[in-house]
Image (cartoon, rainbow, N blue to C red; front, side, top):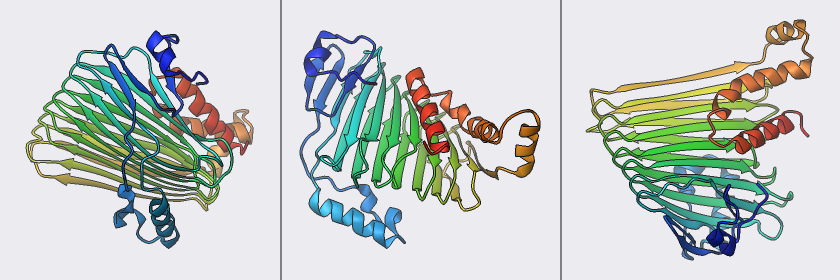
Amino acid sequence: MDILMSQTDLGKNVYPGKIELDGSRIDFSGEGLIIRSGETRKLLSPFLDVEYIAGKAERVEKIKGFFSLYSFINAGYHIEILKGYKLDRPLIINQYSDNKRSRINEYNSIFLGENSAATIVFNYNAEDESEAINSRVTEIRVADNAVLNIIKLQRGNNSSLNLDYNTAEVHGAGVINWYTVEMGSRESISSFHTELKGNGSSGFLSSIYFAGGEQDFDLNYTMELTGARSLGRIESRGVMKDKARKMFRGNLFFNSGAVKADGSEKETVLLLSPEAKTESIPALYCGEEDVVGEHAASVGRISDKQLYYLMSRGLSLSEARRLLVESTLNPLIEVIPLPEVRELVNEEILRRLYNE
């Protein structure tokens, strides 16, 4: 992911394998694709809502202080995939923070027309250890028979606060697939709210996280099923070590009209340390009778018996721990649609596992 495509290059299709943007301003309109830099207006994060910041006074003051100084959008894109156009290469958006760019208020809007398709990657990273606050809001609309893959990689530094709020409306028989990977930032609050409005619409949310040190993750995932025969899936898999903290809130709503809708949510957590703390609150709300809904959560700690069994087969302690981590996360890593992203995620997990 090291090619940065300029507006000129984008128009000439110089790099047919992918489109990669670095946050620079752009105004491009080509066959089936429109990309424009985001508008400059005031935008306060939904995370100012007490639901997300209650009980943590330091977090409250940090977020309120940020928006008192940086209430206007300073990053983000408006992206349109026009009716019938299938983008045959991923669109990769790199957003880096450093000591010169440590306060980001980003807004993205994405629209897919009927029978269109696209894969968009948001790659969030930090180039130094500067204390950064990043607020991101992404709003999406997927039309009938369109398919959108959204991949979000969050690898902020250990001094960062990350706020990532996402909403999507799916119409007709449209499909949205979320692939979110949380591995960075001292504190990270993320929310993904998907409304499956169309008859036969589908939404899949795959959440991978790896938390260590004193990281604190607050993960909020909601699927609202309104369309008849709509299909919603939430699956989260994570590994935690050291003194990491994590809250998982998974919500499935079966609204009136969601006849024969099918929804499920599942979380699997592997704890590598007795000091790591996890909390899960799965919830199912039913306003329609003829539906199928289920939720489940599984939390496990590495036991001496597991390690002894694997080491008795010739593995070292380090190799045994690695195998258990991989077996926990691989089912979701393997469904990420881009091989280069899968490779990056695997490398990052190993680096964090071994504190490299």
